[in-house]
Length: 119
Image 1 (tube, rainbow, N blue to C red):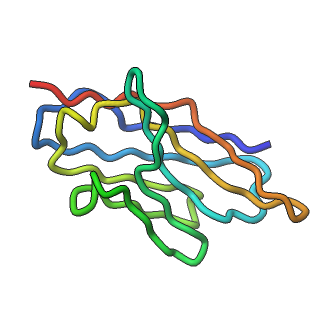
Image 2: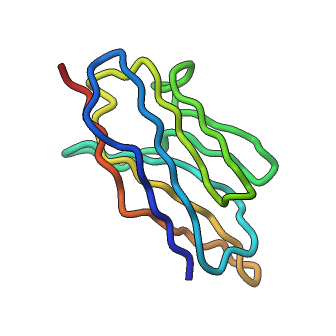
């Protein structure tokens, strides 16, 4: 089993910054990719940013230039630095790991952390 523990959410004013962290523990053998998703009330969960084992990075158009995803392999941790936050960034943010086991890729999710951008 794999456990993902997120931290770093909270309330911030528009234009502010937050950094989310997601630490993985457990049976981590082959991480294919790590990513952050978010879900706002009444909306579907959407990809915010992802980083593969080869360090290929992808961002949603809405966060390009404002958010930065990074990883620390030694700590099995992925980060999301969020700058110039906007009210529309308000959502529950979920960490995701895609882990390969015996040729099958499994999705693991964190519990979610609330990010609220409001004055």
